[in-house]
Length: 304
Image 1 (tube, rainbow, N blue to C red):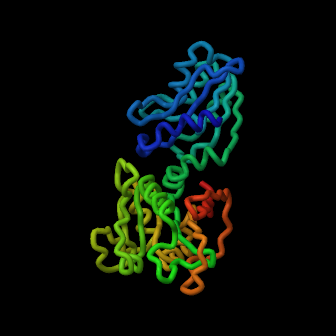
Image 2 (cartoon, rainbow, N blue to C red):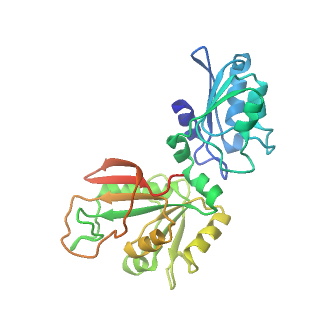
Image 3 (cartoon, helix red, strand yellow):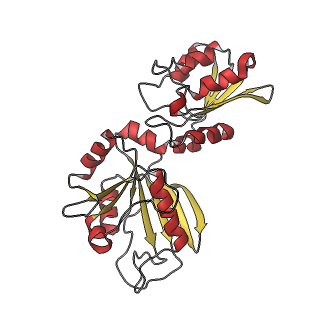
């Protein structure tokens, strides 16, 4: 399954409104077929892996990161192709939340294929933005904050809370999402550009300010947060990085619209100033990483 997840990553940035999928076929403890989904190639991961495996797929085990589809779309159902190839066992990383494509597990079992659903966090998180977009009809929202050790969002006499390495990481995060947003308080205080700079970005995110007033080059969204997020989703925005200060963060948190939190914690005690984060949060899947002199803490409020 780990290999299948690695293969799926090869489609990142290419699959459009489809999920990342990787598949591995194993026969006699040997990998005999591999595949991943790339939007331009049209062929699904399962059929690519089966074609590579050939006759050795009969009686083999397939590891696939997402439930094989059970519907006719650009291609026939992958579940049917897997069963027709004679695969004896399928290990599924995560079920498909899309009602149009789901049902592959049941179809495989009806064809006498042994199916195990691993429901692996890694498989669900790999498609966290797409899953949220499909299931909830809004973008997956990551709240990014830079904080001191005493939970302050600013340090007297300093422009930045976090260090240079952390600021570069933020640009990488911006390059990986469909939209970046702040509140109008941050617009007035910092006049942010919100673009992804000096990280080899192949595209720029939509740059958004939530609130009322003039935000310069940023797109202003003045409606209710949930309504605006649904409108963004309808326009194809699957992921949104929420930057800014405690006011916009509290608004999103209070509305239950934050899925993931990324906290850059600097080795500084500010000693004064407003608190950066005041909500009580319980996170799952927490990971810590040293970024320069700072520590990046990432965790989920809502698992995908």
